[in-house]
Length: 290
Ligand code: AMP
Image (tube, rainbow, N blue to C red; front, side, top):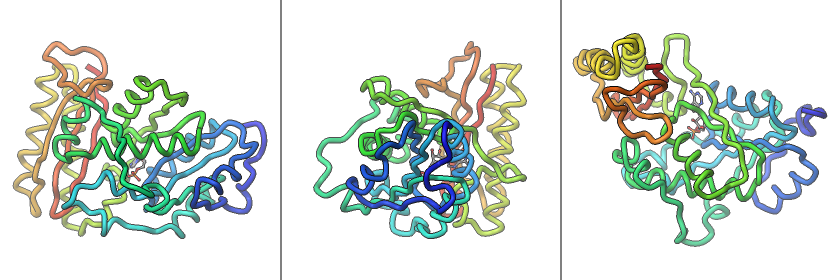
């Protein structure tokens, strides 16, 4: 960073339209974008800090993107807390909050969309048809609107990070994608905007996810089969918890392609899990060094 952030002392400039954004970013220097859906928590803050270190101007977008929600998902009840989100951004020295309306982002039917191909149809893509098309479409729109030098994404959503990286490479988008580590509560639960849905008992059951991933990681020296088995054993126990952890998938995959890691895989892999606790769907992952 060469100069103090222009809005850091007064709080971020909140803009809602492409024209306001363009004015806000005149003479912005090196720009970092942190795309979010709001309901900002410690995980988002950690992304903002990564962005703050690497850019003159930090833009946080807050947009609950209807295109990435399925018909039976939580689009309507997803937490919307722009005032507290803006206060969080002020504390983190964010310069600009981009909070467009659905109409501003999608003034007409979005007939041209971005597809991830096969890697977007596995795991999250299999459980949530259309999810990655919604994500890639909105991320490419945000990248075009903001024109950042870099964009910061959390490794918490590892498959999302992988498909975004692939989009940027395949479509020659002139932006650096930075992956930031997963922020966890002290008990291991990955922070998530959806954690507010959890009752105390559900939250206790949700801890089985990070425990299973740690058990898998601890078996890394014994190879992919042992990693999967160790994590699976914890999740089998979690199925009998109260309330139960209903497993959607557990997978050990290549971090770039999200294809299953073969039995002789060496180097980094991602151990990813998705499960439902009560009505809440949670995902988590860890990097495993094989
Ligand atoms: P969301 O608002 O849930 O769409 O997330 C916005 C960004 O924050 C994404 O890049 C997420 O991967 C990232 N993120 C969410 N939770 C965490 C976390 N616990 N640690 C790090 N990054 C996170």
